[in-house]
Image (cartoon, rainbow over all chains, first blue to last red; front, side, top):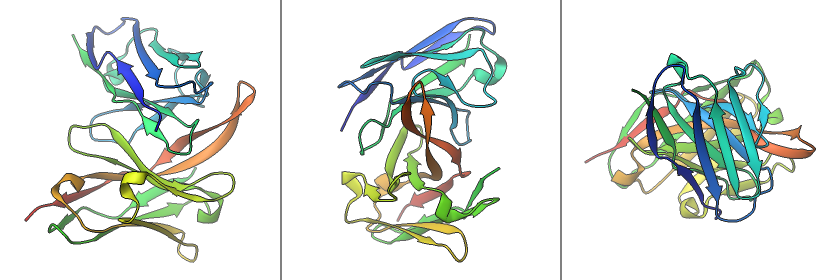
Length: 107
Length: 125
């Protein structure tokens, strides 16, 4: 299976801060990388697909970049509803995998 | 807007089996590719398996082969996930999710775009 390693595993930030989360794949996955946000006690929601395409309705402050083995999710100005856990997920191989998650907490 | 509504929480003894169901509304089950993802308490997301969005082939994660059966009932637009041989490590929230394809940046990619609300399965003696 393709392993996805997210960093950091957690971070603290203020409302309004710019935040960047990294996801590294154990082998090249082209742009088959998606990002999700999971608020406490709820199901994940899709933010970004194909590494950098925004899902309909997702705020413009979320952006994704990367290809191959290294990807980033950037939140340009953190909002109160963004304090949550973020996961990357690859769909390059039949065996789908998620990263371990990055928890974004209020500073 | 597709909605996925799951059955309620379950408490099971070790060794027992559990069925989690996922009813599709505002859409037709046969037009969706339902997959299952679980999340142990305080842990990350773990894909279990499901149907591919193109050929409709069912795929299971290796660790669940032999213990998980995924079925669909078109007459009720409901997908089912049966997990047998329960152990304490299976205590988790189980989600159904719609897995679909779309063109993005020149390639056809796949992602989970709609999720059920989750079903907590507790395995305890």
